[in-house]
Amino acid sequence: MRFHLSPLLVGLGSSLLLASCGENPVALTSGDPTIALTIVSGNNQSGVVGRELPLPLVVKATNASGSVIANMTVDFKVTSGNGSMYVVATSTNTNGVARNYWTLGTVAGAAQTIQVRAILSNGTKQVLGTFSATALADAATQ
Image (tube, rainbow, N blue to C red; front, top):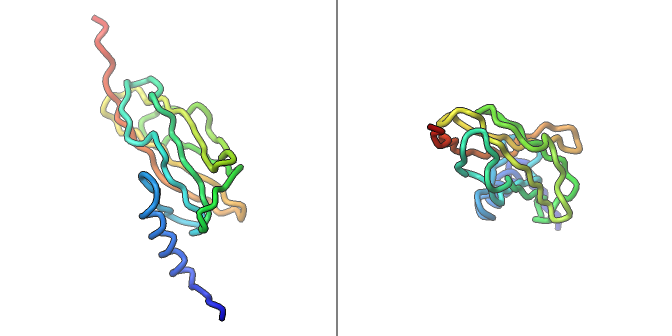
């Protein structure tokens, strides 16, 4: 007996899978529902303006069956706060994990966000999630 699932049901199943796995799952906003990206660590950190955060941003890519996706290029794009990333793009390793380092912008209290993006093998542009951080004022020098 064969079963054919509609794209709506597949998308719903993927959303439920994302909601139930890992720390801080990142919901897909468009594109291929068979790819999930989960924030492993590094979200919601605080750090001094103009300095690199103490922990790297770490994400893990998996497919619909939960298998890791190795060698997937992941882009980390600063979307607010005028900070910078150590590298613009990196690839997932054999465990499906990608890491990058974030230097915050120079305005304390300003919104600081990074979007994690990818271009899938079919050419679909994908925004996979957002990291946020809090920029704290540096200590007074006088």
